[in-house]
Image 1 (cartoon, one colour):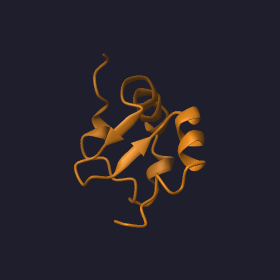
Image 2 (image 1 turned 180 degrees about the horizontal axis):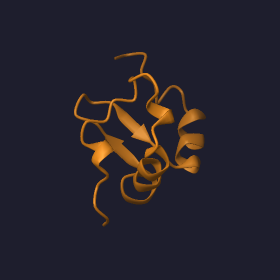
Image 3 (image 1 turned 90 degrees about the vertical axis):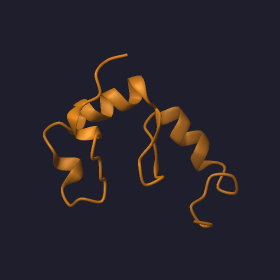
Image 4 (image 1 turned 180 degrees about the vertical axis):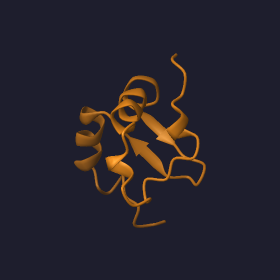
Length: 68
């Protein structure tokens, strides 16, 4: 397992410009390789692999944030 990128420690994807950060590609690569389903401290779950995202998007009754 490779070292966790510094940006992952206090990750907040709601921060304006988050996806424009210079280390965004490195962070995304680390997530895909080391933690493809990653839970943040606030309970948010990030899914970073295409096949996983595709499978989840086809099952809205099972994978939804509707219920909080």
